[in-house]
Length: 238
Image 1 (tube, one colour):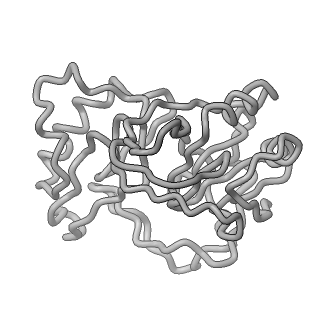
Image 2 (cartoon, one colour):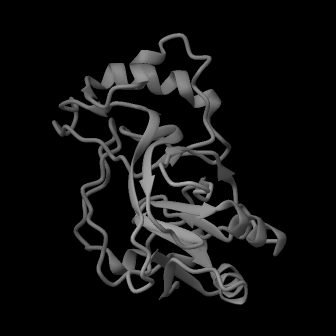
C-alpha cells in the first residue's frame, strides 16, 4: 500500500476565508512538575464529542494552561465520551467547529495542516466508494453568503508513527508525566509500516498529529471523482 500526505492546493484559485475553533477543549499544562514545560498540543481534535451533558461545561470553554492535576481531572471527565482509538494530550479540542467562513472552497478544504473539511456532496461520494474510516462531523460555521455549501469536518484518528530512521538518534523520550515530546517533524519523513492501520484510508499520525495521511485508495478515488482543493505528496514507508 502506498501512502500520501495531503495539503491545500494553493494553485486551485479558491479564496475562501475560515476563522474557526472547536467549541470545547482541554487546557494546556502549566509548568509540568516533571519537565517544567508549559505547553498545549492543539492539533488533536475530536469533533464528534458532545460535552453538553458535562456538569462543569465552563471548564472546557476557555483556552488556557492549568496545573497538571487540573488538566488530568478534566481529561478524566471526557475520556468516556471519546471515540475508540482516541489519544488525548493537553490542548485537545472537542466538539464542532464554530466560527465564520466566506468565499469559495473546493471539494476538500485543508486550510490548516491539521484540519480537513469536506463539502457534504464530496464526502458522500467518497463514502460511496467504500473508503474506510471517513467520518464527517457537523460544523457550526456561519456564512453571509446565500446558498453557502455545507462543510463537514473529517474526524481523523491518530494511528501510525514515523520510522526511527528519520528521527534523531539522540532524541529524548516523551515526558513520563505530561507526555510532551520535544521532537520536531523531520523534513524527510518516513513512515513505520509496522504501525500503519489496515482499516483506515485517512488518519493522522500518533506521534506527529499535524500530519494527515491517506492511502492510495483515497487518492485514486479523489482523482476519479474529480474532487479538488487539495494536493497529494507521496510519503514513503519502511
